Structures are given as C-alpha cells and as structure tokens.
Image (cartoon, rainbow, N blue to C red; front, side, top):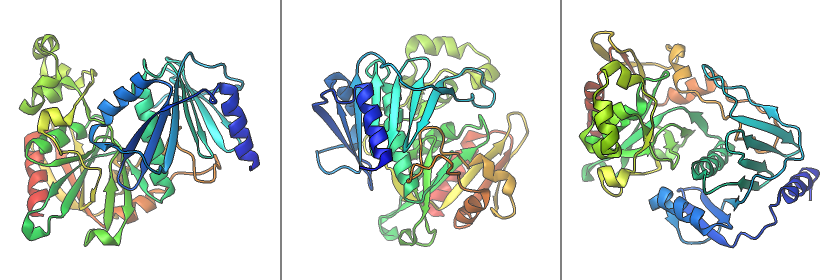
Length: 373
C-alpha cells in the first residue's frame, strides 16, 4: 500500500468506516457504474426513489461509496473554513487536505465526507441529510468524468430524438447563463415542447468524433431539476410541483418579487412530463448563452463564435470545487484555462440570447433548433 493509501485508510478507520454496511444500491450512469453501501436500509430507499431509472442490478462498479448513518464523528484534524461563494456570507464547509485525499465537514449538519485514493465515505446523520448524500454521489461521478478529460460546465441541457430519417439519433443543446438568467426555467419550457432532459446545473463535455459532425459529447448529472415558484407557476406541466397552500401565497406576489424568490422545489420528471424523459448522454450540437435582462426590451437571438466572444465563456466555465480531486491526488491541480473551453466550444454552435427576457420565444427557438437544426 502506498503512503497516501495508508494515510487515507488509517483516517477512515479513525472515523469509524469499519462499521458494517450490509445494504447496497447500484446506479448505471452510462459509462460509469456506482455502488453505494450503507448500514441504513431507509437511506437506500430514499436514494432509490431519487435516482429512479438509473438504479440497476448489482455488478462491477467504477466508483464505490459508503454512507454510514450515525452521529457525526470526531475529527482528528484541524479544519480550514472554505470561503463563501461571491455574494454569500455564511461558511457552509470546513475542510482538511491530507496526503492523497480530502476531508470536508458540513458546518450546518455535521456531515463528514472523506474522499481520495479510491475511498469515498459519508458519515453522520445521512438519512436526515439525504440531499447531501445525493450531492456527494453526484460529485464522485463528476470527478470520475473529469479524470477522463471532460470539461465541467455550469449549464442545463436538453436533447431531442431525431425522426427515423435521422437514424434515431439524439440532437443536444446546452443552456447556460449569467447568475439568475433562468437556464433551468428555459429547460423546463423546452421539455414542455417535447424535449428530453439531460442535466440541470452541471454538464461534462468531451471531444468525441464518434458522435458525428458536432464532435462533442455532453454528459449530465443525475440530479433532479430544482426550480423556483415562478418557474412552476408559469408552466402548466409544473403546477403540481408547488403545494396548493404555497401556490395561493405565491400567486399574490408581484412579478419581480416572484422572479427573485429563492424557494426551491425538486421536479420529479416522470410525474410532470411522463416516463423516459431523462437521458444522461447526448451529442452537444449547440450552446445557448442567456445574456438577457428583465425589462431590457426585445429579445435577440444570434449565432456567434467562441473565439470572438470570450466574454461569454465565464457563463459556462465551472471550477471543479471542493469535492473534486485530480487523478493523482495533487491538490495543486488547476482547472482548465478559458482557451480550452473556447477550443471545445468552437466545435458546436454558440448562440447568444440578449435583450429582454422572453422564455416562450427562447424555448420556441430551442425546440426548432433541436428538431430541424
């Protein structure tokens, strides 16, 4: 065993990772299979319900995760507070880097996450914080894809199954925007026009000649869309997402107040749009950048080139963040440069949507692009 592996296994043992975890859940995410082991059947039932169609039969796994229900363990390390995201003040995470891995503590819940050298542990009140376990699973998947050479994008994505004349192939479109632009809202509107869902907030992009002329493949993350009340109340397919007592209260708000309201709801896609509408991989033919603003007049949609519009790249670029480590565990690893994103995006159509906000017009464009190119 390497020194890094020894440190990680010793730390895991100190945290209580040797406790029995007899129950297992398996996920098939296309080119990545994940096994989640736990001492809590109730937790795995919740995860089974959440991941839905991606649950599969047991078999070899690319990523193994152990989630142990119990009180938060004592931490034998000095932790450093992670700086809050821009515009935020609350410290949500503390962490410590160790040879070959990283330990993260969630300050509000006490949940502990340890990962590196093939170890992936979640410890603490997992059932009470199953959303954090979901995020940890998805972060392990993201890290797995980054190790394969993917770029990480801050984007939603949709796709459409071409007709028989198109060979039954998928055509895909990513949707990104600057803060609060409404990429999830637009994705839901495009789904209401018949599109398939690929991802809500994170997208893995890689060059792949096998997908055809676009040369890009996008992989989504198996996380349900989370929407604000305004998104639900303005889309008939989503009305039931908001409980009746909340719906009446929100309908009384002014449009601007509703737009800025932060009160998220999970969208269970099968219930809202029917079964089989969630796919994780598709060719990436285009990227829509929402560069619009409420009250800014008419909406303009134009095709641009990535090399000519470096100002649009930050809307799509996303740092790997606290929950990802490079393949060799070197914490000095850096995220890709803008030039790498520009080169990749030069392989697909880049579409800027500017002016005022008009989701109906943008959604009409997106479905037309997906169906007819």
